[in-house]
Amino acid sequence: MNTAITGKFSRFIRPNVSIYPKVTSFSTKRQDASIPVNPLKEVYSATQQPTTGVVYDKKPFKVRCEAGKQYSWCTCGHSKSQPFCDGTHRNIFLKIELRPIRFTVTETKDYWLCNCKQTSNRPFCDGTHKRKDIQESKY
Image (cartoon, rainbow, N blue to C red):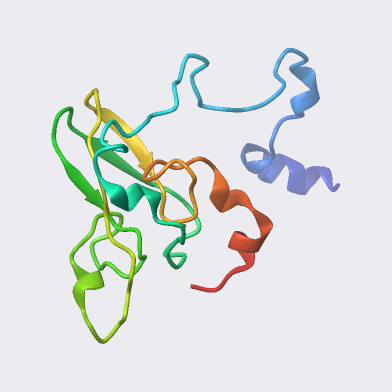
């Protein structure tokens, strides 16, 4: 590479990562992070729906949820207020059979809610959006 160009754009060139031997990955995840579960999973039958909705987005949505408050997560993927339900599934002309998932959280903090609607840990993201078929889908 030309040294004149390198000097001019040195602030944009990433340093060699190999000089940091103890760094194996760059992740912001905490080691003690627990996977959230829906305490209302057994109460509402909507969590046992065998089908999943259409892919709304290919990445999760970070939402601040309050402990004890009840939320309705959109399962169908047609809601205009994603990731929460706005009642679009009630439109008889759309013929949507999916119903929203009601959930609550045990502690107030930021949660990643699934927007691909394919998660097996409804409504929380489990990384399913990283699958090749979901990334290649058109929404």
